[in-house]
Image (tube, rainbow, N blue to C red; front, side, top):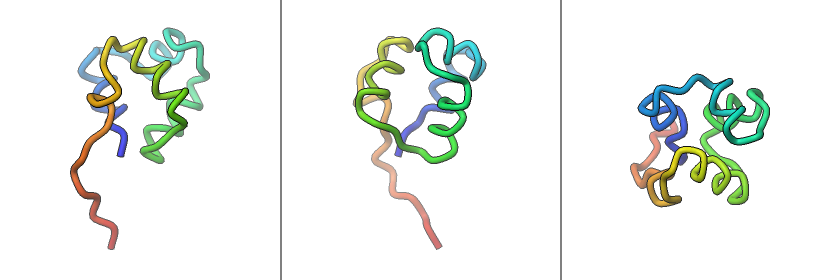
Length: 66
């Protein structure tokens, strides 16, 4: 599961600002935050913009789907 919302908020960025930094649409950022996944190519773009590794982008915490 992706940790985009937490990482974006820690960086002090709005969805719009992150989208601008990445060259993606705000809707794409919204969708990734809601779904918790994206293509690896998109993840790399976001990681570069946030100056983090792909390992930092993902969480290994189990999701609770009841």
